[in-house]
Image (cartoon, one colour):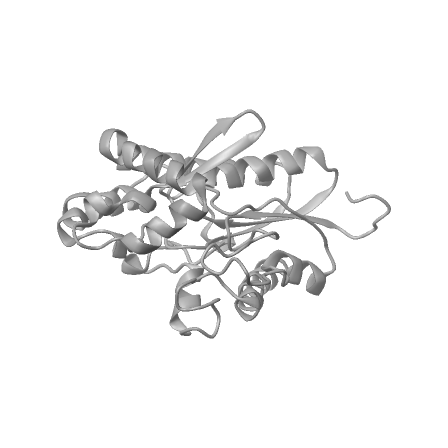
Length: 272
């Protein structure tokens, strides 16, 4: 627990929606120091907070950082995880972790649709050398190692491991999915029919599917076409009101308050 504090301690993790130090790649001049949803929630419910979220993180990282934070701190009472895109993987180099979302390089399987325009991609590569490295790594993975079953297994396992870890320690928890776990707009129809639809069937029949506690997992089963929801759908349904701009879909200050509200409602429903 934080030194000298008598408040209960909560741990939060996630990707850019959660990162307390988030900076917009699209608008680098923008002041994004507004409170993120974990800080808003912690103030509302009188918790001390340790937020280990970081931009670009995948779900393995989210589970690992929460487990480490719980083990490093005594008397953790609450954990909140805002899960990331299922396509993200991490590479280790010493103490640093390098995140690669596969959708950065999905032009090959997109057909005519790309995540970023050629112009924006070129601009980012010039301004941010790591972006070019990430793009090249992701393209290599897609070209040589793309395995949807392995991706699904890794993400479901991370969620289940964290849930099991918290239940055994009698720690309260709320999970939610941040970005769309499978971002269908990134893929062409042929790829969706051949690859994504079978993946959805595998998800529904996965060995960890029935073991995940849906009462504590807001929006389950997460994917809209099978009746679930993820939180960036709420951001996008409100035009530009809750996001930074039309070009940057990350939640703005008002959007962060809405994310905190959803976690608060789920918390009250399960633990009031």
